[in-house]
Length: 233
Image 1 (cartoon, helix red, strand yellow):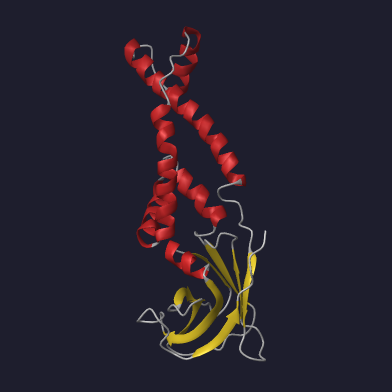
Image 2 (image 1 turned 45 degrees about the vertical axis):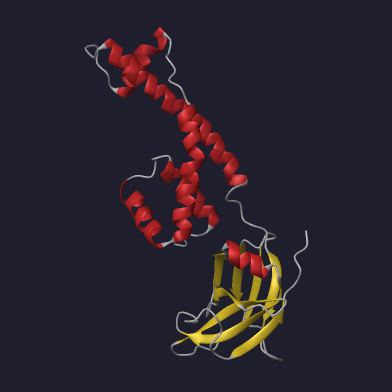
């Protein structure tokens, strides 16, 4: 399961922040957050998002006619102290009010925060006169890349293919991460990567040791240099 897909990650992170993700599912998500920065960032973003709402909600005292139904629903008995009933019921109504507001926020979020991004063609990566191996697309703000494998990628033992932005003006190449041998990879870029990518007109592919360049710069042969398409719209 690809937890980093926005359609899955954002609802999971929101549910976790609300305390509605329980048991093994919650424990697994916590373990993933410990090793995947993007998951941790999403969880923290939703926690920050809901905090003002939690602080703003004030207890609501139900009318006397609602008490019998409240007692039945939350298992209170006639012998339960009246002042405790009022305090507990007030909290129960606060939670219900919060749930209503949050449901609305999640419905809006379905169409905004975690909607599928619009991808724009960035570059087609192919060696001279050869079949394209990868197609790279990005969002209009260059915050995310998706790399799609479109041809048979030669598998080199203990080697990786690494993608680089080539900034104009002779600045050093900036790594945009490893290229997949098959399938698609979606990736969030750091602020620094976005800055240099937006200053680049070309990208390159180098062959590096397994896991990528150990120096932060290309160390192996550069096998592809490609022009980048301009994002429109």
